Length: 187
Image (cartoon, rainbow, N blue to C red; front, top):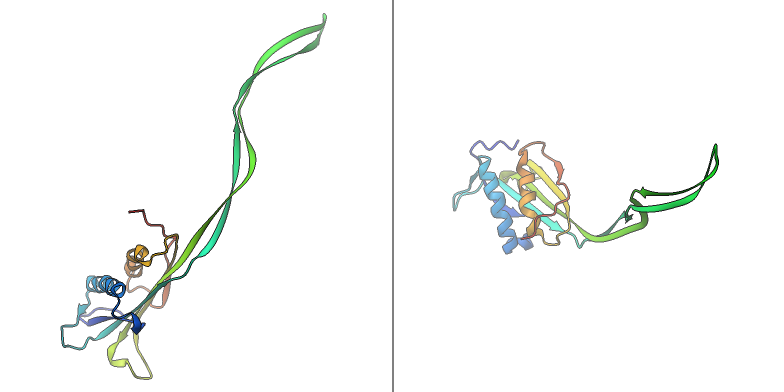
């Protein structure tokens, strides 16, 4: 399991093409901090770690999503004067009555809004270093977070995805946590 027990770790990019990217360094730092908070220890320089924390992440090109909602026009209330005749015991009586008609909402069609929604993901595979290169790579933890967002930049949503990944850590290994649609505040 993913019990820390004083075990050491190093964070690595699952996609080796990312290992020198500033973006990877930023996310690796967040994962490093979270693992330390859960009792794992960074491997001292020159020492082999017990565990490798492989991370992978990404965001797609976005999908247009159209939502519709009803539109209403408000017709305010007004006074209206009614005239006519009413039959009474003494015959037809003319009348003039001013009465208030309350305002009302009148359906005025649908209003459509199209926004681009992006799907983002973060994965963490915590692997026993000694099992690498064998036929039986041993994962002590596997976690995934997915979310949708209106923001096309992964750094905007990554802090929330890392928090979600470690919210119930180690929790159920292999579980995918779906972060509710995420729209961070504008900075």
